[in-house]
Image: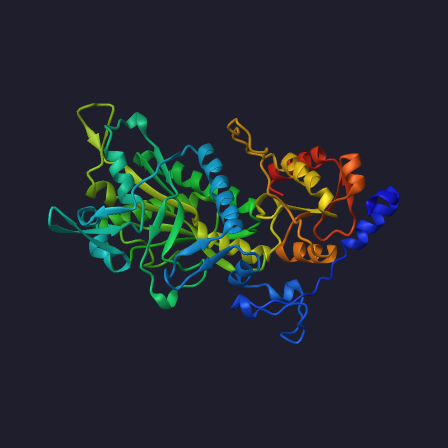
Length: 465
């Protein structure tokens, strides 16, 4: 079809092809009963902005995740949802390297004795999943970890530490389990199995202020990338149920008050909402829609170092001191932060984070092979060969729609699924080695080479656009 018209006419035709209706319908319960464009009476037609609000609806519409009653509160991330999940983790890993964290991987199940040492068995048992096992005919009780901190204390204690080694910063993305009430389970925001961008800092008392200020700086940088325009700080103080002495709690709360006062940021006190082992700074962010979310947290802990008998040698090798432990998370849980982003973006993902960055549409079957060649070149993912593929940080998600359905249907589907770019290839593109490319929401198409498109994608990703 493309071989007998001029380049300018081809551009005009591309523009007409890309003018897809903005209105469509969809329901979100059982897919088998979903309404479609051929049954306009099934539900009122609404615009994208009218329909898409809740992250659970968007998760269905964009095939990001699913939840099954056979495993309540545990999320199945589908391929495109996993793309977003992995990108968030990769992004955070890159930031944590800059801020001096070493990533570790810790077990998810421990004997009851560990949780008794940490205090979780007395203070948090009802929110934990317990597992029984028989070892040498004796029944033992285990607990799935709801937090990483006791395991990180064990890792700290595994090596003799000097004051010169501190601060030591551990990061951990392994899954956690908490027995949330079934009635409270909600999409990605209240789950039983989740992943934190968890971090624990073991430091000297004179390093506490610097470490907390550094964490606030990390939060500030991360939230700016994700378009969170503002956040506020809350000092959450001693709860009714706690471990440790009042003197230790007062010391920890005073330390946080001092850091917050010197930070230059506004903060307020959130009485009696601290963790059972220490006070904390909760960071409540506001998204572009004005909705507030509690995600990041910074907690100061004098209790676990004491309970696990953590030490470091001072300048005098015969004298040891206890480190101070700082718990921190920026996303909070990756699942919850992902839900916030889904609703904030309303299905229109920024390119760098998008699970569907580009769709290639071959005009006919004879253009499919060329589309596959373009796919490999733009994505940075080569064809299977006898050699191992090198690590590539500039790999992009480029899909091909080679279904035997009308062009208008393919374009409409690409809009529904949220592709950032759509490229059409036909006879002239095959001859010229180009792609007719259009960005979502833009009626004008560009004729570009695959290498030029890839360079543009690399630039956008480097700028978090």
